[in-house]
Image (cartoon, rainbow, N blue to C red; front, side, top):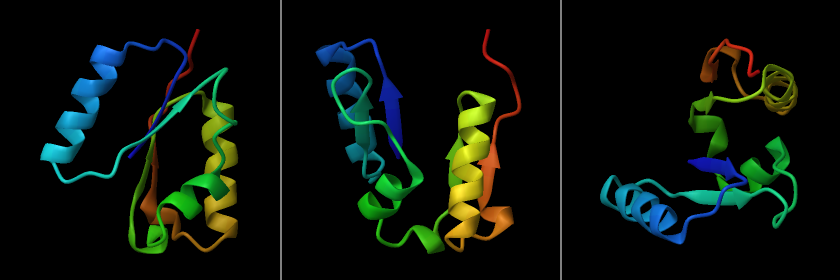
Length: 89
């Protein structure tokens, strides 16, 4: 699981890490303004078996379209990319 945020609460991050560990989920957190921009390539590097996984995207539609295009070009099956369809205001 990869999460991007601009609002940093160490308490909240600690809870997310604990929940992820309890669920046996490898959590990677990217903090805007501190970390480099998140890309599909960075996700593929962080998740070596990404071709056997499903990608679930929630965020800005244009960013999601870019991620989807990049993952599909790299070989992810279309059915394995899931995106919430809404526009952020």
